Image (tube, rainbow over all chains, first blue to last red; front, side, top):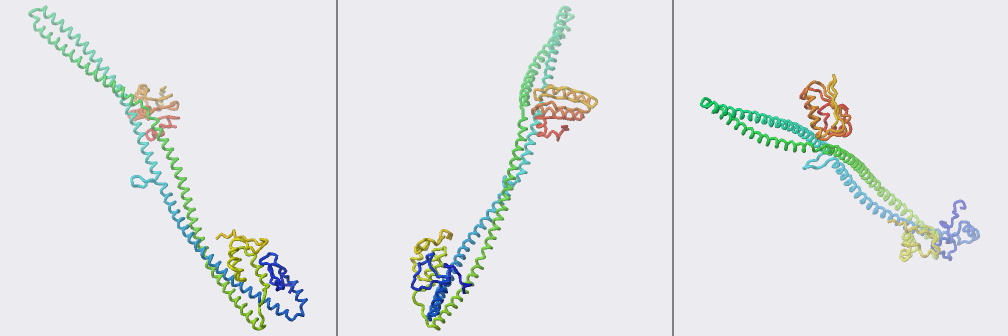
Amino acid sequence: MNSIAPESTNNSFFPATDADEIPEVLQENAEIESTAEILEEVSINADDPDLPFQFLNRWLSLSETQRKAMTIIMSEIDLVSELVETNISDISTKFQELAKNSQIQTEQVSILADSAQNIEYQGKSIDLSEVINTIDEHLTSMIGKIIETSKHGVEVVYALDDVKNDVVKVENLIDEIESINKQTNMLALNARIEAARAGEAGLGFAVVAHEVQELARSINAMAGTMREEISGVAKGVRLGHSRIKEVANIDLSKNILVKETIRELMDCIMQQNETSTQALRSSEEISKDITKDIYGVITRLQFQDRAKQRMENINTTLQVMGESVQTFATETQQTFDINLEGRTPEDDWFKSVIKDLTLGEMRGRFLKAVFDEGDEFTEQTENTVPDLVEDNSIDDDDDIELF
Amino acid sequence: MKDSVTATDDGLTITLADKLTFEDHTNFRDLLRLIENKEHKNCRFDLHGLQTIDSAGLGMLMIAFETAEKAGVNFQIYKPGGQVKQLLDISEFDKVMTIVS
């Protein structure tokens, strides 16, 4: 017996033998007799004929206490099973919602990533690179027209330069006509003088000279008109030349260089868009992984079914054990015709067991089941260390009750 | 615009320096007449010393090319640099005429 009897005082199955001594409830240092002390007592009182009955009485008391403890343990297991089932069910529901939202998020990120590469224009979805190419084509076309316009401007200036020179030539020709006409007029005048000197014989010649003079006068008038006309033309040409020079002199080289600036800006937009798209694709993949993980967690939460079944099996076993103990106790009482009266020393054992329980409400339920202590005790132990413990030596970790 | 003309058996080399703007259109026309003469089968516009050019200058180079083409003269722009090269590149002159870098 020495070899198997524990020497520990707190969890000993061999409580004190002094039935009159009432140990302090749940006191950490509650005195529970050691195995050696019990054996010593047995040795001293070996001749006492009542000693076997006393021990039997104590065994029955212990079995009664243990049966009560088993009952409350079964009750606690049911409670834990229900607690786990309820909370796992809630957690599973929350995870289902989380997975659903995660899936929606994945879809939205996917849509966003798809649309990042396209823009909507006049009801059509156009790829961004196609937009940039279109802008580039328009700019190239615009620059081609600038070059063409500049070329035509210079060509027109060249043409008007030629016209200006031609006008000067025409003016010079008019000068020559006027000079020739002046000489012609002088010749006609001289002819008329000579005709007058010739008298009757010169009459016909005088008529001709007169006509020539009139002709010269007409040519002179025509030359004057031509000069006026050509002067108007020259004025118009000079004005046009001046205006076209102003137009051709407008420098559009900076407008041409704008194409390069726009191209660089477009490249920046494309690069930024590419970065954003990659980030969105990455987010999409992460969201998918999160969704997958959540469904994995939901699957793993099904452990609760297995845990519940095991706890039910444990309870069934405990119930059989309790019934066996009860049957054995009843048969023992009937056989030896003894009564369980007075103090039950096994209280110390039980209290030494439950004092290590960290949940106050659980401790209260244990005490109520065994000692039938009232709700007052349970309420007192709800969130605090029981008042019965004077030295507060029992660690009560109620603050870890996360549920 | 500063210009110099070199005629060899290989052809006509017109070297332009400083800048080519609308103000140079009269002098440039004299150069066009050299091309129109058809005395040379090749014409090279050496632009390595040309610092800047405006849109009218680009138009004049295009006229020079068309004049050479009309006269059956091979036309070439030689070693443009800086802003001139940048503008020729953006305007895609290389798609129309030969540009030697």
